[in-house]
Image (tube, rainbow over all chains, first blue to last red; front, side, top):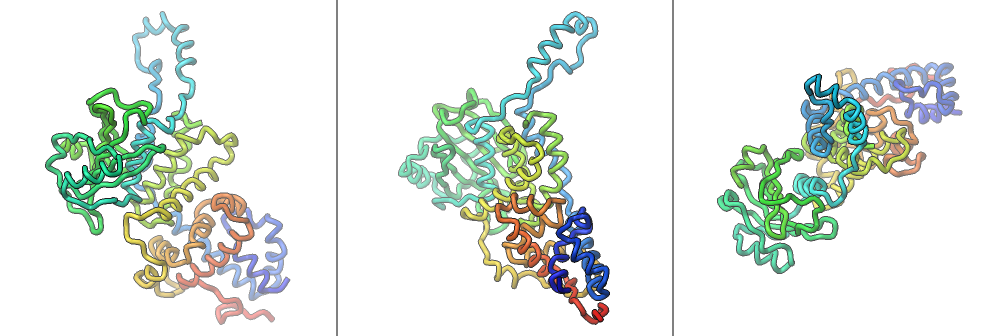
Length: 254
Length: 175
């Protein structure tokens, strides 16, 4: 093995792992012990690698990221009701029954299906968070309805009263699980950095496309990443309204 | 697999390294946080399909990387810049070998490394993944991964002013 071959191998050496015991590095390490030039290069290389790694590891996740991840998952978790405080006498009386029931009810629940409201909501929110493009840019709702009608995409949607005052910016037609989703885009009124045009979105899909569609017009609120969402059903459709912000802001548009 | 307590322990163990990997790819807190959240969402919905629990780490990093690539492939919300033009826009990192590094400099330099080298280099430094795990995460052969890491490291060190020439004046020449 030449010095340069050894150097090529040692480029991949990670001092923070068990690479020193890895036979793939053994010959090159032996050469580095014998050759002064290679040894000095290797020592400096290891120091540099350690320094770079430390800087990579200093990137800290946002303080609330873990909470956000867990809160997004929370609505699907079971409430372990038998762990809630109960009067001691009652607990004693139903202990056996309670334990049996707990074992039954505390089994892992099924994961959300691909056609659940949570799955749908997550998908559409993440679409606008990262990857959406509007098919039509327009500030005229009639034009938007006409475009959606031409694409058979829920042109007969109904808007919450609060949304009527928000300026519209356009629309798009998405698909989810093979079903069309109408996306109507608005501005909430907050300043937006260019080139962003919208931060308020209404999504409309057929009610039968969502396995656990909301039962009626009452709103289900859920924060998904940076967007607050409200979901409800009306007629044959399921609506999700999403805004970059919190529930208080969202309620202004309902 | 993705029931409450298990889900929480997986989140506790991996959200930080996943975020670090996502941040090294996207360099924005919002996108990195969102990629991390999306990864755990996919875990919550599909993680039960993974039979071998020793593969959770690889599964999560693979999922995050795929999400990132999927985002890049589709129409983007923000203007797309070719790497070369981004390279010109980024402030240069003065190659000053004795200066202490900070995270921003390292990530800035990583952003200037060819895209194909970026993910393997980030995984090399961030997580104690074996080369086989890195190859699995990125879906490329191990030989390719080693080559990309080696070239990526050399480029990164050079951008940071940390490239060390063998037999350079600062090293003792081989007799």
